[in-house]
Length: 80
Image (cartoon, rainbow, N blue to C red; front, top):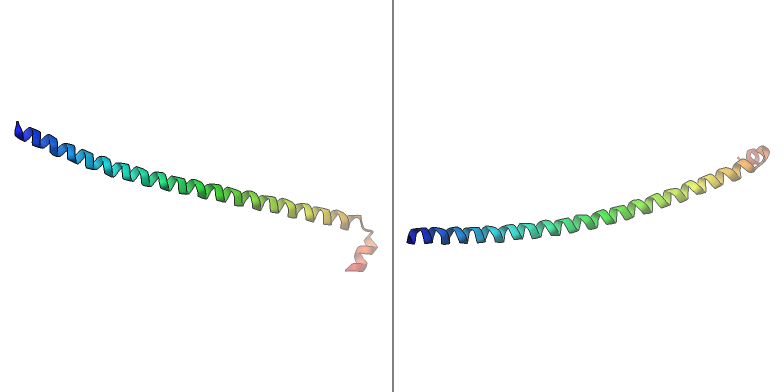
């Protein structure tokens, strides 16, 4: 019976140690997940900022094209 108790106590210590290790691994994964989520938010913001800048540039090019199209052909040729 003593051997069984010792074996159970040993198994209990082993399981408790494994539990601590698993909790530490889980905590590390959660930290990594939070870091990755923050990176995703930052990259999405950068993407949105870039898209906004592209839209603004496209609008500027379109307005410039309209202005150039509105000029008489002789005025455009004289500037070139």
